Length: 142
Image (tube, rainbow, N blue to C red; front, top):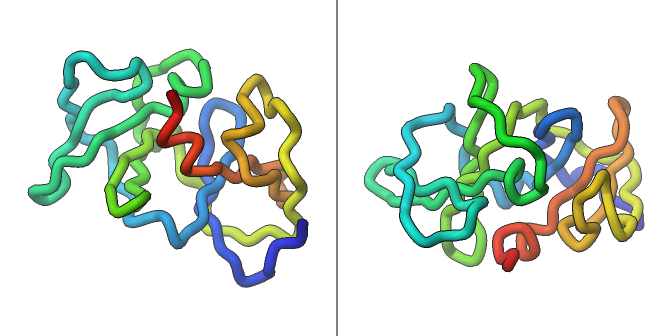
């Protein structure tokens, strides 16, 4: 599957792995702020934040991908995305850059211990392989 050279992605890191989301889905990137826990939700839902008067749920990809949780650092960020008319925050360890991929390959069944269904493809970048997330699977994961 060839990527068009003008399609841009936000590349970010979780642990030692690199992932990407299409830039058209990203609303903004903010520093970590206080996340209010809410009861009776899936373990990967960290809670909600107040983003300029709008309540936004926040999920942890570390927890969803079964990677050990760590304390937030100076480089930790919340990537606020728009998905199906809703805003959702995703906690990431670091945001690397805006990038394009010269080639995108179909994902294998498992990517580093993570289900292949979470990915639309694997982008080939100068720094290595980058998993491009399928937001429908990640955000609607049961």
